[in-house]
Image (cartoon, rainbow, N blue to C red; front, side, top):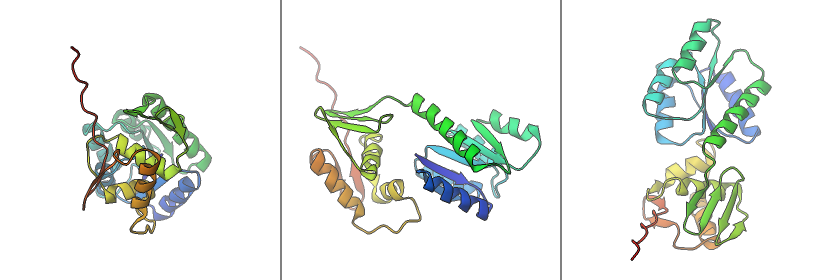
Length: 226
């Protein structure tokens, strides 16, 4: 589960980043509204923790543009403002929940878990591609009727490719999905994961686009019956 934290307070933002990563989330942080919208446009996140008082574009502007794009990811707003009207406005613009600063980390984590459960209930359908099936709720993969035991990052990589059939995913986009922005990743790490997936599945499943990235092509349509 990838979480984007949009918080301009460096101390709070870094504290949230560390805490969420410690609790198993793939978390990233940005410090203003423009950077939040850019990150959400270029990468896939599952949850957004959004401070209303961001510089450049405030949280209201981010919410308005985000929902205007049709993005459905859950949004938890953070606000230091005591005005009930601000919280109501945030919810009316499409936020799913809110917390007023200061807050207890345990409550934030509980609210994120609740939003995560709602998201899983909305997107419980398995990803399927021929003889390959991925159950996102159970975090399992079946290939030709047998269950595979995939490490977490191989699972994340396969999920990203399956969710974008026919689309070439660039190396940079896949690296960010797996490792985020701040980790030092060796140049051949992605190729190692691809190699392992091909060995466990089939070499033809993942197509290499030289100099660009990788793709799982869409299945051809069924031939019409006689």
